[in-house]
Amino acid sequence: MMDLDSLKRLVSSEVDRLRDRIIWMADTIHENPEIGHKEFRASEILTSALREGGFEVRVGVAGMKTAFTAFKRGRAERPVVGILYEYDALKGLGHACGHNLIGAGGVGAALALSRVLQDVEGSLMVFGTSAEEGGVENAGGKVIMVEEFRAADACLIWHPGSRNMASRQSSYAREAIQFEFYGKAAHAGAAPWEGVNALNTLLLMFRAIDALRQHVRPDVRIHGIIEKGGEAPNIVPDYASAKFYVRVADINYLHEVSEKVKNCARGAAMATGAEVRFWNYANTYANTIVNHTLADAIEENMRALGVEVYKPQERRIPPGGGSTDVGNVSQVTPICSFYLVIGPETLVGHTPEFREAARSEKGHEAVILAEDPRYDSPGPLPEAGALREG
Ligand SMILES: [Zn+2]
Image (cartoon, rainbow, N blue to C red; front, side):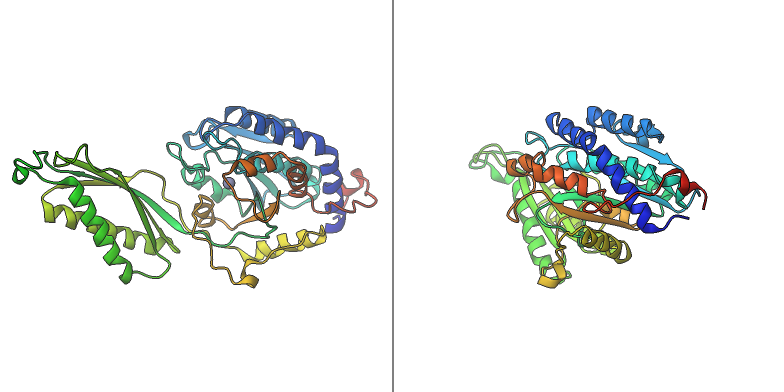
């Protein structure tokens, strides 16, 4: 068997060979931004490269036209290591989250690892996960295809950012709930006693939720907006609606808190005599379970590449309160998502600046670094044929 160092050097030289192609894929996807579940071109670019690399590709996973999986067997079937891709853009903003780099870097990783796969005990599985970004119908592709990830023994994904991190911190579980209140319209001045005020009901719910805040755990975040509150001041509103996010550090507690929030709506409706309806208007995200074993391995590789690794806990920053569909994956298989710098520390996702960084020289550097186990010093290469002996 070839030693790990030689394997890494081989993969590294393969990444060098693929460099122009990886950057071409990243830039082409950047120039043709497609929103969630419509990433047809990106999906085509990524899967055709995988097919060429000898992967068995399956497109249209879990009923999503732009989601895919790809598999290539190594010397043994297991363990199966998974690589996750994202490739969707933001409505009106293009690739302002740099998912063009995630997809292209992921293909680079799969093709480069292909070179040594016959010398490794295990297989490679790729997961093309569409529609990561919210703002489209049925966002959160990883939630929809979550059963697929059980095939992998461990998964990796990377994301461009403003700091090099071996692992993201945990993310919050999140439920997205829409509330609708139905009352009865009436002349607000002449005969208000004939009306049932839907807006008042909705405001009561907001107040009940504020009263709830004192009696839930400190990690709970409940935040909502009023979508519709009436037509004119002289009409008692017969309809009002609000959208809420309920976020909690742990999915088991999320359901309990969501139920309390729904009770606030039920109670408000009872108080005014309005009717209430509610439902989840987006997929529910689970919290991310951080896998420290994978994170340590990634960190070791990053340091070997001369990357300065940022450690959030060293600076005592509390865990992020955001939510991602990576969380749902982390509930079924160990996963590590690492971050690589594509711009200054002040760079913020979902902005035009981030979009420009996603096709900058620094962005290109990151997309190569993402799959390179030994970027700096490839060193002398062992003969590929000699590897198959051991
Ligand atoms: Zn993103």
